[in-house]
Length: 315
Image (cartoon, rainbow, N blue to C red; front, side):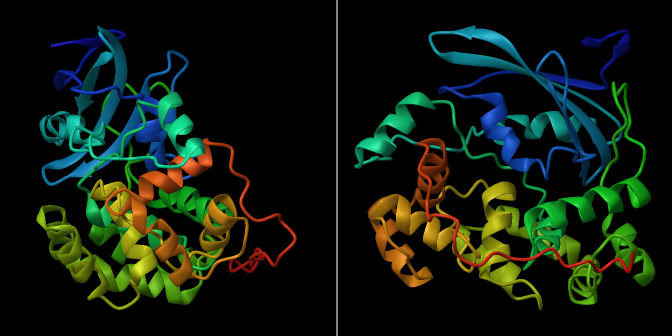
């Protein structure tokens, strides 16, 4: 057992990473905006995260506990009905499955970014439906707007987290909780009927959706895109977070193809051209996109059209 303050955790795991791992770069990809009620960064640099495991909700605290020879030790403490499953999931959350041994940066800028960020890993939460909801919220709207909706919905319909959270947080609703949100509350949170209907229609199939965590990438994508309202972009966004897929490319993103095009070749690209340009890094294309961002690559100069904020709340 371990203590956080004076409260004993329901479950604890200390884990030594087999490779360099940076806590915040790795798990930070799971945060949906700086005010995400399910993810908070504490003053001591530990990360608090809420989730909903098959056995129930859980609050997790992840912290760096030292280590040697470049191999860090992390501690995961958890509270709530899902605590045991939550700590068991911590190694994959910290990128234990993410193997960079075959990754060849090829380009000097990528090689430098990879050298400077050896602890960047692709997290795997295995909570597929949980990752799918915010991905649907981000469909065809600016990211800040989607984050506002996620935050509003969690504060209204999420539940109090178990354990000694040092600040207010919320556990995302259960599938049934998402299904029961009234239409006017979606509207109030700035979510248009198409996105809200998609989430409500997916909720009864959450168990089948979560089965994707045990499938190879192609089968997982096929399972997700089988459902109406889930296309290639949404499936890739889920794969990057829930499935730990270092190769998933968010085809159809409003800015991504041009970002990659200008970072790699100094020109605009279509999605098809982007995929051709990324082909030398097959198996690691999502990793390359993240490293391009860390390399300082600016992508396309911001003179082109942008998505506009659309107010669906009626305010």
